[in-house]
Length: 437
Image 1 (cartoon, rainbow, N blue to C red):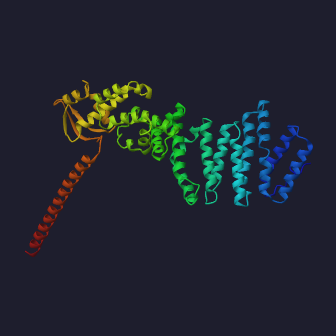
Image 2: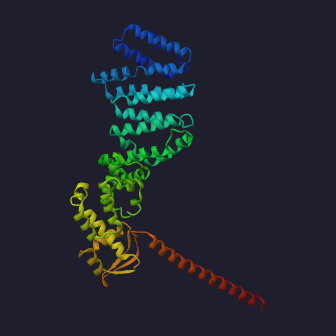
Image 3: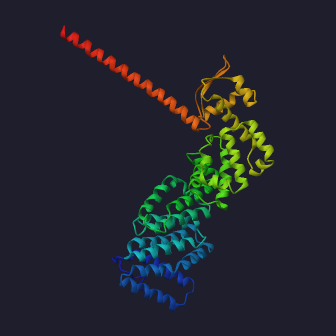
């Protein structure tokens, strides 16, 4: 009887014996020469006796192809896919278990982790299981100064594997945690000259922004935020960290401009135009320059300005692949905001004339729905009463106006405080007279 099969129940390494037995049996099923099977058995027993966990790990890792291919043959031959996956999961789980229990030096741990990740990423079979094992590997390694770089590599390995295998929906639940995890290993790597935290953020933000739109409809429906808006937020984050004008950033800029136009909730554009890579690209790329000019219309333009833009850049909107109706509608809402700036009442007739449409009720409702305007329509007086409105452009003039308003407000507060002091003194004086009577 093989020494592998006859392992003692109280052996501290007994958790690795099931995998050793499985490898032994698969070698026989694969008609492996007896000499090689015996060599494997002898090596395993020898390393067990020496309590050499790293050597056992290496011995198992060498048999990855055998494990996967032979189990796949069993599936094709009639074994249930659940049974086959269970065996493969047992194999990888044992390797991962050994990471934390059998590595006695940091170099061995780093080499072993890299090997597990390499094995998991090297095949296409059972992608869901491989992703699960990659995530398990990441979770099994405590992040310290010596393991931070390994954890970082596993993290991006997990994300890219999920993206490449249409499994990114498995990552959605962790979106809000990613930046926290990144900051954890960044703290340990800040003295590493090769580590670039901003580059990592760029990679993460771009990956998420590109993957969210690809999610299946049923996944999108289950998300708390609208996926289009969520993808736009990550895309904006990416562009704010991007400094290079290249194919990737140019493609992202085009998508960004398209989403600014299409998303009904995006009205504050002035701050978006300040994105460094957008301005940088507009100086060297004619198409981006036109995109910036188009976005500038949302800051200070009108429907008439849009007509002039279309006349000057014939066919550009079609090339950009954005509905002209979206641009016109957003411009009308923003023009409405401009009409309402600094006013408490605006005649509906004036709004109709400025927007060149008769029915302005729906437009006003849309503006209030997206909180760019707070007000109501007075049908009797045919006016729009305004409580607050989005400031399309906030330049030196607007800052000066805000400063004047704040000064007046502070002056009124000072007067109120002085008035309260006078009242308090009078009350104290009055109370003193009553008490002395």
